[in-house]
Image 1: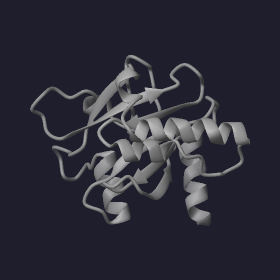
Image 2 (image 1 turned 90 degrees about the vertical axis):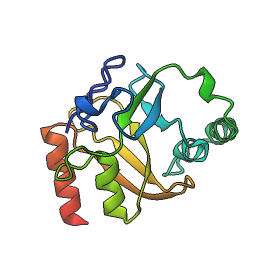
Image 3 (image 1 turned 90 degrees about the horizontal axis):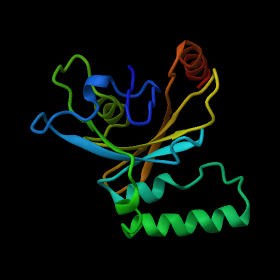
Length: 168
C-alpha cells in the first residue's frame, strides 16, 4: 500500500493514492494535518478529533528534557482546545471505508486488528533513512491510545517489520 500526499510528497506506504483526497460524496473520510513538513521528523494528526490530536503529540518513550516536556504539554493543551488546528495548513483527507471488502483501508484493517468498530490514527515519521518505519498510533473515538503499529514503507522496512513481528 502506498501513500501519495502530493503537496508534501509523503510516500510512506500508508494509503493508496486513490484514497487520498477522495471526491465529495465518495464515502466517509478522515481529515488530517501534517505537522513539521520538510523537517525530516513530522507527524500526521487527525483534524476531526481534538483529543486524539493532543494524545498523538505525547512522546511514548519519555526520554525528553523538562523543556521539551513543557513545550509538548502546551501544544497538547492548545490542540485539545482546538486553538492550533485553524493555523495548520498542510491538510488532506483519506477514505475510511473501502469500496472493495476484500481490500480493507488502513483504518478498517487496524480497527479489526484492535477489535474496535472505528479508529482514529496519527502517524509519526522519524528522519528519512533506508530502514524507516512510520509509527501509527491507533486510538479509540475518545482519543485514548489503544495500540501502536509500525509500517514497512519500503522493502527493507517491510522485512524489518516482519522480523519484529516474528519476535513478538
